[in-house]
Amino acid sequence: MKFLEKETNRFVLTMVEKNIWMKDLAINYAFFQEKNNQGYESHKKAALAFVTFLIQRRGHDQIEYTNKLELPVNISVTYSINLNLMDAARIPVDTFFSAHSDLEGHYISDYIPRRKH
Image 1: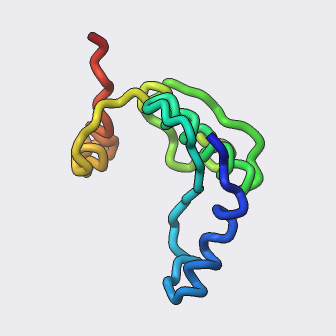
Image 2: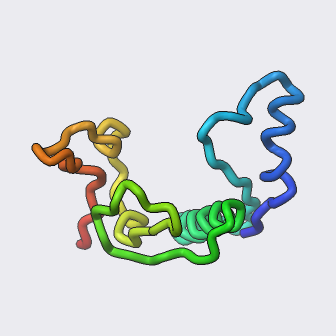
């Protein structure tokens, strides 16, 4: 897998040139080229490379690996990757982005881990 840094950095300018305004949107993106797609493994590599790219772009210097399911809202130093989430089952969008919360405001569900058979 190859991270396409030039294309990633140029994307917003290309969209503006085509009158598709994206500059102020809170969208993160990165482009990769994969010649030998290995399915899930390729997806994991791309996800880690994408988070690494975001950290470098925003001036952070590390990825923190964690199995925590709840993180404080005010995290501003590092991104966290829950490795269990990378092995999550496919679920409907409305399940992943759950709006249901308990009395303290904590989300009741955010993803369903894949069952190991």
